[in-house]
Length: 603
Image (tube, rainbow, N blue to C red; front, top):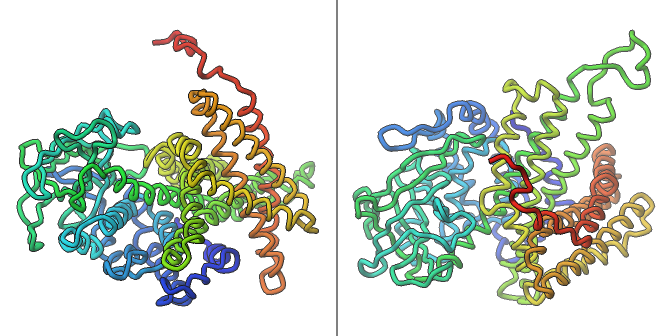
């Protein structure tokens, strides 16, 4: 069953990160903490009562194709209708587009609750939100009237169509074609695969955002354009037209998120598929699509946090109830009473690892969203501060996507381990959490792609100023709290880890300047992990300091939990950065030098 810890969430929002500062800015002055809390409470009730109960049945039923159209599991259509009646999906959309204009920091919490309750269901509105955000930013007024408004209202859904059979991470190899018909209308032909929410029965129409190459356009990513390709054509006055020659060739049978239809889509098999050039601007498809991709990458990180959180809380509840064995203090006494497994040291270790990672990752995602909110709110009045916040969004996005998705699988695995054999069977939810979580490290750019993005682009962005600002903040924190009576040792350990991060960055720079790019790709993932673990340790320690300072006005156990989670992470997880640094500076090329036949003689 879905579980959420609103107390921990609210501590992160208001006590630690001070999200309420946003309501003093013009961009968010129309909202208040009380209103945002009410939306969070309402969202929790909705997912607990509506989408959460559909999670396991939807996983068992999956999706199917009937008469050429995908049929979603029972209850999904009604859940979709109720979701858009409540307006959760339009919370962060601009007021001028029909949304509430709410902060992304609160939007992260709403997304966590929805994805944690039912990851597969939330794929449908989540992608619709991303597509709507792209159209709001780049679409023409006509695009807004024909497509954006119905998407915000929930009458149309949306997708992102990049991947092709021979163009996965290599987007520049896209073969889908666009032939000019007149104005901004083009004939579209090609096949897209692994399209999440590619077809379903939840809405009257689906708006596909399709990357394609206009005839005569340059090769590679620079020649790609983005098109609005509705499943059902929409006339200029908004009336539905004829089917637009978009066919669902098949849907995938997957390890997890089975209730989310992952489709192979054929565009223009009969020569009658039309698309509208987004904003009327050719060859800007990648720039436009990257907006949706970056939103989606952050959303995947939040998916990971969501699944990790409910997996942890379910394991915690089970550990408190499950009686097994006696206390280690009485292990020689056969008559000693049986105790809940939460009293066993190794179970406590696993639970504390889960707690620390979940709470650290949640803080990271909300902090990234807060940076985005501040960048937007300050853009017109303080360009310097806005640029700083925007730079931190760029720097942290690959970390949120990669680290949170990797650790979601690890936390789900630990949850199963806490359950023991009971966690391996379908009577409990944690096995589904593990299956659902595996895709997070793969889609929206594999985690290696995220690591390459970090080391090849994000570290050097704005002349390295984004990274420099990040490191300055860490250094100031360490110097300010190095002698703290309760956490000084752990803060000092963070300082040493920051030094390891800087040395790893220096090693990367040497490889780049020496032209040894193949070795950069070999160590990109460990570098991202170092940066992520340093970041999480900093956030956990900062949260612990806040909890310590407010212990008198808070629950003693809650504050103690924050402090010990930070200590655990600093002492059990953070030391791993030094091993990763040793691997990075060691220069081992074994993975590059081994011949293909050296892996195995088996063919």
